[in-house]
Length: 242
Image (tube, rainbow, N blue to C red; front, side):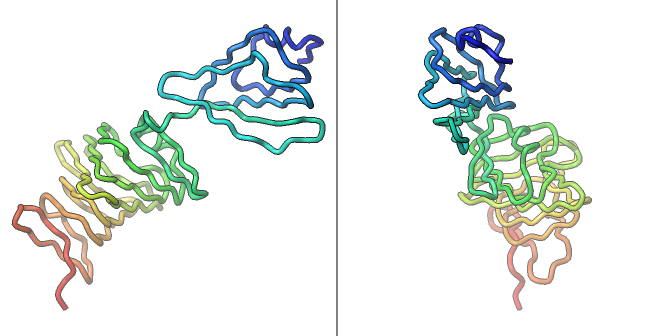
């Protein structure tokens, strides 16, 4: 749509999925509600400003601004989108390019994780479903508890994916509260355990390099590791004596 008066644009039904080219500065007030699904992009022609065009986001979100390479004739091109504020996040994903995305809901992080990502817990997480993303990635318990109540397993990787579980802080747990408490069930994909405390059964294609276990973890046959009960009643994976 084209507008001869920029203030007519401000009075129109702008949405957060639109792209706007401003050739002059608007004076009419316009507040646009941003969401986390669609970026709102503004091209500012030489001399034009946002003026009274402003943005609003839901509680626990903040506005992320990304500058895009500007074409000739424009001072700037900026993409605006609502993202979860770090202070409100329960989970974060460290992407392969080094950037970080924050999430309030673990399930949303689970869906958005890609191969090579690191999912980091920022608080304890309780979910009814399995919590393994459809990607080969790392879950860092980061000292927190990941609790599920799905019979299949709290950690139940998809076919042809590998989930590595680590605990960079210590004290992190993987728990299952279902009738059959499968903490880790790698019957389709595979799991590498590097750290964490596991309360529940461990089965399937699992490689154990560390961690402690609240009951016999149903260890797969490994050449170097075995499970032994320690003084606190936990099953500890230790390297076999040569």
